[in-house]
Amino acid sequence: MVWRPKLPITNVYQLLDADICSVCGACVAACHWKAIYFDNRMPSRISKEIKLCVDCSRCLIVCPQVTLWAKKDLYSDDVKIVDAYHVRSRDKKVLSIAQDGGAVTTIAMKALERKLVDAVVLAGTEDKLIPKPVLAFTPEDVMKCAKSKYFYIPSLIELGRFDKVRSVMVVGLPCQIRVIERLAEFDVGISRKVAYKVGLFCRHNLDYASLIEKLLPKVGVTVESLAKMDVKGKVIVYDKVGKSYELPLSEYENLARPSCLQCPEFVSRCADINVGSTGAPDGWNMVLVMNRRGEELLDALIDALETKKPTSDELNRVYRMDRGKRGEASKFFKEFYGVEVGERFLDRDTWRVISR
Image (cartoon, rainbow, N blue to C red):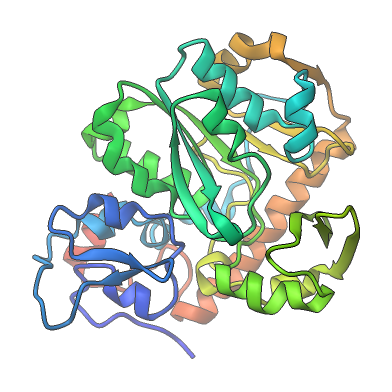
């Protein structure tokens, strides 16, 4: 079935109804009139009866899903990098609790310790892994957010707290990093406080309910007993007593929502560096340096990290994943919207706003 928004589209409400929200939290942070809030871990309108929305389109402008409607290059162009490394933390405590090589945890901790930034935007959890956005001010705050999360966390709600800091590092998925780039394109003030953007490799994410109610029961693991998860060609679930359970990748992919299926970015084009496990040996991370800012960040922290160069075959695994996701997203886009990527299917005024 082809989905078309009812025109004119002036806010993200229709996107929520069509399930193409990536739960990044940007619209909630951007809305001055508090017409959007989080309900059951998803954005929601306050009430259809209470007309708080003034149709200013701020939420549309920052929405990373809407941005995709006009970004044909994201679906067609290969990822371009400056350099690539296998990276592992030198901190044994970090390695004991972090995912893979602990690169993101170490980079965030050291950036705070060395005053490169005042705070770091991260994805955290509360009891029973309930998603929790975090603005970390200390290395201890960062350590509490260690390990990968494979469900949506609206980290960018923390954009609303940027007035309390001078400079921040944003760690996020490609959709979340697109928001920061979008804010910079429109010269929104808070974007000037983002000193570094750290992207995370992303195939797909799940909503919290799908993870807890559909995926974990397949291996008999409860949220209380879950230690961590890995998605590396298959799904590996670890419990707190050290046992591991495997599922075919299809069990995970089948739970993906339209918001993920239309996204072409396995690697964020807008990040300064990207970090993941694809193409890296066990216990290490793959780090892609995307620009000069990324080079400066790694140079400033290199003494806290072990590094070695990946082989061309290891790097090609990342490129293959990125190409595969772009191809699948292009196909889904045409099936879902009934047009090719980049074709205008909204009214002229709305299209002019989102395609700037």
